[in-house]
Length: 158
Image (cartoon, rainbow, N blue to C red):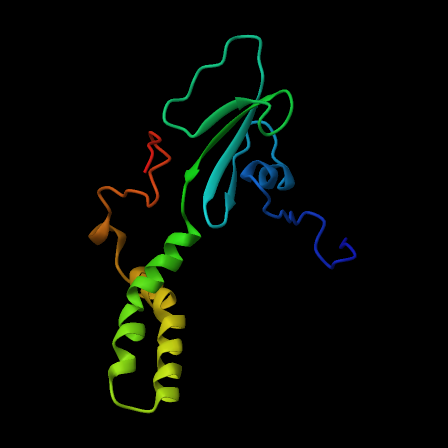
């Protein structure tokens, strides 16, 4: 049932490479099956077999290219220019007082350093926990825009 690595045979493991298309291939992309590749950016990848009729262009996505993912298929891609990077930036933004103000407050530097590190490690998980306690109907977003340029829908440059 398992493999030499101890993973069940149906477990798919893919690694990032130069482009998200490689991640989609590694995940076993098949026609009409969406694969989401996530890292410092995200990319939703879909392939459709190339037909005899001219393809219909999908407006607003990042790319629609014959053979870009696998030969003989049209590759469609849409994603966010930044993803993990945005979380890292947001965490650094929220931690700014710990780096800019805390050192100037009197006290043991090693205690302040340990305090700052502990808070930084807990910022995003604590925000996530607090957000999960908010009923969705009380805080539904009206619109979101992406950092580093909005790629989808209606791709634009930053």
